[in-house]
Image 1 (tube, rainbow, N blue to C red):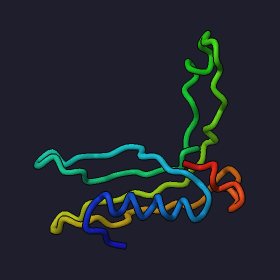
Image 2 (cartoon, helix red, strand yellow; image 1 turned 180 degrees about the horizontal axis):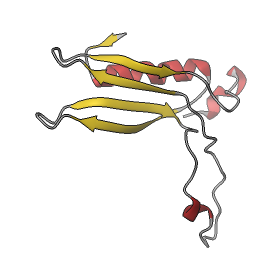
Image 3 (tube, one colour; image 1 turned 90 degrees about the vertical axis):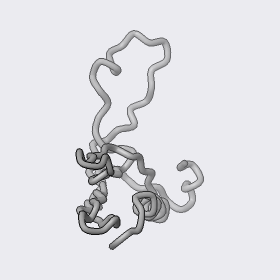
Image 4 (cartoon, rainbow, N blue to C red; image 1 turned 90 degrees about the horizontal axis):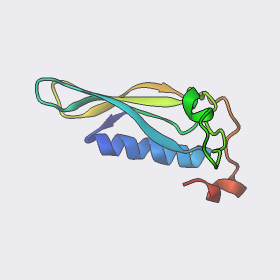
Length: 109
């Protein structure tokens, strides 16, 4: 798929995630050195990765629940160099956790 702007690509993945029952977050980006434009942008499932170990072992009063499950679902948007459009460069749809059912979809952001 081709998008005119980066925000259109991000919105597409957020809408896709809402339909299939998961939340997303923006993960990382890479910029071109020549003009500073974002050349790669990663959007991932909000349960991607694992929480850092020091935060789990800290002596805080209120422990946060573990929400990261090591999920691999993600999309990578890449800038086409000769145009100012973005394409879906890679797409991984496998989740390592159960997705939200339509009855409990109101609990997602």
